[in-house]
Image (tube, rainbow, N blue to C red; front, side):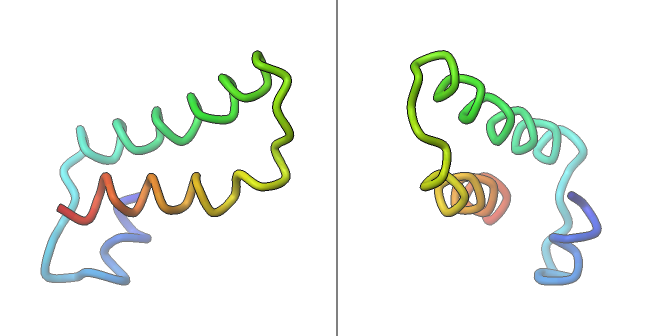
Length: 57
């Protein structure tokens, strides 16, 4: 995660805790959707957007 953000935003490094939080959120969202029986095909944009928002502050 650090490397991906560093490529896009070299002026704003990501702390290890922020990277861990973003990964946890991205893993939690589809797990919840699976438990609820929802279709995952439309989630890719949500997952990417969530990670980006968590790391862009």
